[in-house]
Length: 306
Length: 280
Image (tube, rainbow over all chains, first blue to last red):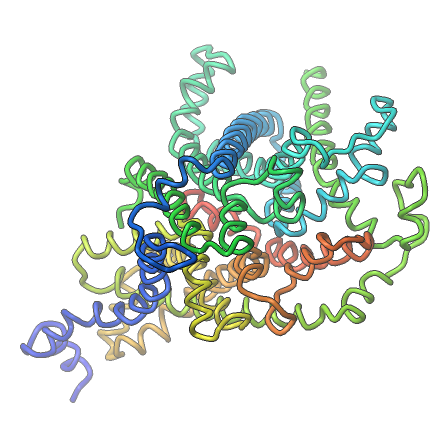
C-alpha cells in the first residue's frame, strides 16, 4: 500500500481502527496509572484501615485514635511548635525574599552581575537537607561554631551561647536553616516575576511621576500576585511537613521544643511502634495538605488548564 | 550623575557581600572537612585552615565504607529518574497529543500535581508495613518505587510544558510522509525533546540524591542505605568526629550543586512547575 493511502485510512476511514484509535490514549495511560494507584491510593486506604484499629490488640476501635489526638499533650505541643515554625518561616522568607528581589531589580542592571547573583543564591537552594543540617551543626556548635566565633570577633559575645540546648535558641537555629535555604527561592522567583513586568507600563508610570513605592504597589505587585501566591502555598506545604534538617540538627530537642508534626509522627510510628495512632494523625496532616492544594488549584485554576 | 553611580556600586557591593555572608556557613563546612581533627580543638579556631588534608574524605569513603552508600544512592537515583521519565512520557504524550476528553486530561494532570502536596510522612507509615509484609524492607527497590512516585509531578508537568512547545504540525507532517505514530515520535519529537529531557533528568536526579526521610525510615543496613543516611549517622552518633562529618556533608552537597549549576536555567522552572519561565 502506498504510505499516503494508509495514513488517510487511519485518519478518516474504517470503523474499527477509529474505535481503537479512540481508546488508544486511555490504553497507554492506564498501566502507569495503575502502578501509581498501587503506590499512592492503596497505601492511603491502608492508612485509613490502620487508623481504625488499636495497636496492641488489633481490634476495631472506630474513631478512637482520632479523638485521642485532642487530649494528647505531645501532639498538641508539636502542633503548636509547627504553627510557630510555619508562621515565622513564611513571614521572614516572603518579606526578605521580596525585598531583596526589589532591591536587586531596581539597582543591578548589568547582565553578568545578575547571573552571578543568581548562581550564588541558587547554591543553598540545591543543598541537600542533610548537608544543611551538617552546616547548621557546624555553625551553632559552642566553641568552634561559626555563629559564636563571629559574634566573639565582633565583640558582641563574651561567653559562648549553647544554641541547641535551650528551646527558643534551638527553634531559632532550626528556623535559620529554613530561611537560609528557602529565602533565595522567594527571591529568585520574585526576581523572575519582576523581569516579566512589561517595560512600557513601568515607563508610563515613571513618566506620570509614580514614586518607587507606588510603582511597586500599583504596577508591579499585580503582576507578581499569582507567583507570590504559588510560592506561599509551596512554602506552606514544605514548612508544614519539615523533617529532614531538624532530624539532623536537633532531632526534635531539647525536650520537645523543635518536635514538629512530622517528627512527632515519626516518633509515634517508629519509636513507640504505634502505627495505628500515627496513621490517624497522618490523616489529619493529609487533610491540611489537601486544603492547601485545593486553595492553590482554586486560585490558580486558569493556569492549570491544559 | 556621579552620586547615582556611587550608590549603585554600593548596592552591588552590598548584595554581593550578602551573598558572601550567605555562603559562609558553606565555606565553614568545607574548611572543617579539610582540617586535621587536631585543629578543630584549637582555640580560637582560625578562619582559614592552616593545614590542609584530605584524610577526612578518604576516611569516610574507605574506612567507613561510605563508597557503598554512594553506589546505592547512584543506583536508586538513576533507577527512579529513568522510571519516572518513562512513566511521565507515557502519561503526558497521550494526554497532550491524542484525542482525550478535556475533563480526563485536566483531572489527571491535576491529580498528579496534587502529589507534590502529599506529605511524605502520610505515605511512609502505611508503606512501612506494606514493605515489611512484602519483604522489601531495607531493599533499594522500595526506595526506587517511592522516589519515582514523588518525582512524577515534577517530571509530568515539565514534560507537558516542553511538549506543548513543539508544534503538532511537525509531527503531522511526518505522518503524512507515511511514518507511524511511534516512528514519528522517535524520529521527530524525541530529538526536539532531548535537551529538555536531559535537564529534567538531571534535576530529578539531584532531588532524589538529596532525599532523606524515606531512606531514613525504610532502610537499616549499608546494603540499601543511601549516602544522606550515612551523613546523618555521623551527626547523631554519641561522639561526633567533626571533620569526617563535614567531609561527608560536603560530598553529599557536591553532587546536586554541580548538577544543578549545569542545568541552572531549568532549576526555577522545575521548582515552580513552569510558573516561572526559563532563565536565559
